Amino acid sequence: MKALLFVTGRGVGGDAVIALNTARALSEKGFECEFALDHQATGYLFEKNGISWHNVNIPQAGGHAASRITILKAGVKTLKASREAAKLCRDLKPDIVVGIIGGGAIIGCTAARMARIPAVGMVATPTDSKIVSQMTTTIALPESPLFGYQTKKNVYSSYLPINPNITGGNKENALKYMPADFNKNLPTILFSSGSTLFEKMAKAPSIIKDELDANFLVVGAPLEKEYEDYLESVMHLGYVDNLPDLYQLADLVVLSDDGLMIHEALACQLPTIALTHVKYDRYHNMASIFPGAVIESDLRNLKEKICDILRNKEEIEKSTQDYASKIIEAPSKIAEVVYQKYGEYNF
Image (cartoon, rainbow, N blue to C red; front, side, top):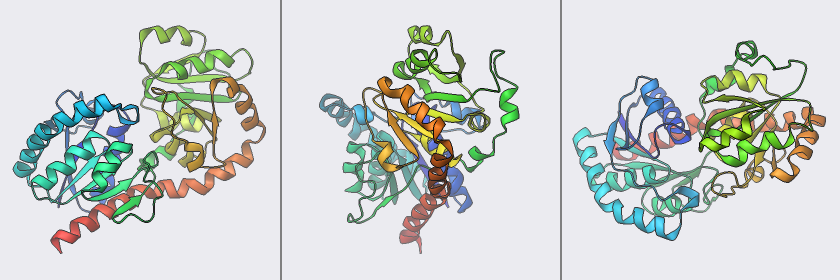
């Protein structure tokens, strides 16, 4: 069995990780996985893992930040891109296509239909949710408006697929790489908006660092060089590849209100603050998806929320336990949906 995964983005951040984690689960079902990325994608995570990929055109409208204009521009490019992707499907002859988020979901599923190959779309934005759910079997991820929507046929809801190894970090390994001013006797707060550090997340620790006794760790490569000014008096680790170890070191995490890291932190049973409106002013209400375990905050009340968590850490950790096992099971559930779709055409 062969699956072809169409992946939106640069092959660096969350979408790429979701693709790799999905492929890992599919391989356990017996699928051989290949990947298609946009011509402009650097594919850093794939290259780092020794994985090659195919190049196609995967237009993006901007995800949740998409406007009518960007959606229209992406739509104009979609037909040509789908034809190119359909040719790839015919050449590679996969048994099933999996389209992953945004343009990857739309182009992948459209191309599969044109090539008469079964497909499953994993969706997370209003646009991909609407389009893909009208074409084929759809897996709605938590940021999708279809998440938890039980009455629509062929739509399944799932937490994001994490790598189960994310829970196997070692605190002592993380300590080896800490700056000299790290204090093991203080609580450690990890700040991140993913592989890319957005301004609001870069700014957050600098606002409260003088009011709290804690280690402030910040990970991610700043989106703009000037954001580095916010990081001069905190411990900025940059782009890291030892997140499992850092999760074990942290007492709590402050993350953007979206994406894979919230799932990873909960799988590690970490109290989590979702800082709102970090990425292009988007708001996903992750606190409603994980009530009791994810606490919502903005910059104005961040100190207060951190203090509340530190005072009630054990109680909040109990709430995270309710989600940890379900999140860890998500990759196998996604793989089962894909396998069932494959079975409809091959059994």
